Picture 1 (cartoon, rainbow, N blue to C red):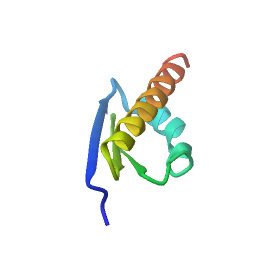
Picture 2 (cartoon, rainbow, N blue to C red):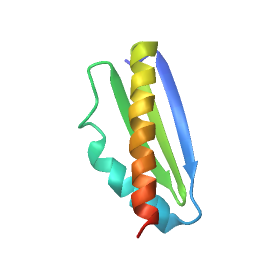
Picture 3 (cartoon, rainbow, N blue to C red):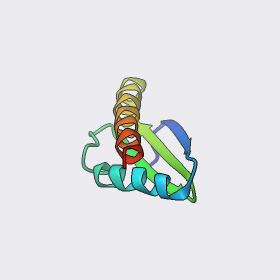
Length: 82
């Protein structure tokens, strides 16, 4: 069953290689840091990443969004420094 709360973040990058580096940084965390009340899905099409955070309740959704936005920011910074 799909959790009742969902947020979708779309990240558009200047080129596909940057999007790929960010994706590779985030991919290992999918399924690894999720809690009992949240899940995350990651997909990439060209230079666009799509991150979906789903949760059983709004508190868990907020916490999940904060976690994934922080991880995304760190991954972007690391990918751009290359």
